Image (cartoon, rainbow, N blue to C red; front, top):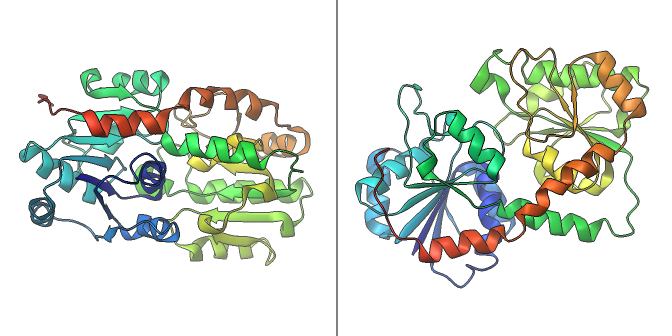
Length: 340
């Protein structure tokens, strides 16, 4: 039996093409946090929901399930994931974690106090660029295998079909994420700075408020963004990404959210907005615009096109075959000890 443990929505997305595709007839169990549970439920995927998980609870669940192998997401601050990684390694059950985005590599494996690292037996990463960046951050290269990204592969095909003969929408999507929770102001900005700069710039560029949507990260509360949006206009829509339809949009503004990747795959205008950033650029997409000031963002809104997104989308072609690769690995992987 294969055990899947997923904490954030991106982790649940990663395993969806596996359990609905090549592993649909396999025996598996999914343990999810309440956040990722909503996505799995919307896709009618059987799963069990667990709140914050102690080592004892992970021990009891592992003993009850007796998995042959486990595939676990790797989230920043993920307590559910780390508990199972520690227990599975103690039981010498093969434990594999995956990277779902080109960002926050080392942070995913730090314990809560950031004084110790918890590594699985194997880490699946997206491509050579991600592998090199992980090694540069100190993650042992012997633990890393390039495996692609199943959900991005799935969405690449989905958007390709949807875009045939499609007329792009005219709306602007602002994508949030909880920067302050994990970085404070060490990047030079947080999510409030980001949203306020986007709204100021859109207003200055003459974009109607009725065409602006704010998509709130699943780990964040809607209320704070509703308060910010109302300080500009009552006509701005604030919503969860479960209600997203990318075909409605012309432009996507984010920091380093995976929804920027969705925008690129959908052929939209995409920009990473990082107000006054003081650290190395965190955006994972090489060719899209990086905007730091209101003036830069206004100019991009008024003159930008989709050329950069189309150029950036070429890198995703290497992800073809990701789903079959990961499924094959889960079916054939043999446990091997590591010293990490």
